[in-house]
Image (cartoon, rainbow, N blue to C red):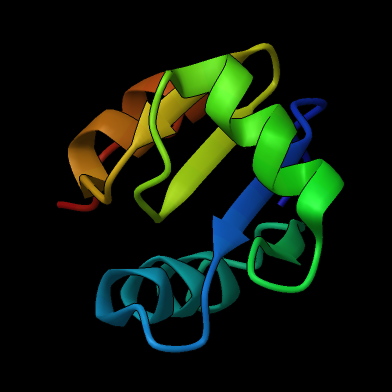
Length: 84
């Protein structure tokens, strides 16, 4: 899907909602970079500075951050039209 916004998904392997977010991105052909904050301390620190917390999932969409998974909010931030 052509969209100039870069998407980064901050995750952990045990996170159920991270898997839901990842499946949505893949099902909708949205390119993203997945970062496991358990194994990447620098990314964990960046995420905490960006959001003020350590919970996942966090999606960085362009210059905006979304804490948790909310399909409608992702669509709004990514400028997708909701499916009919």
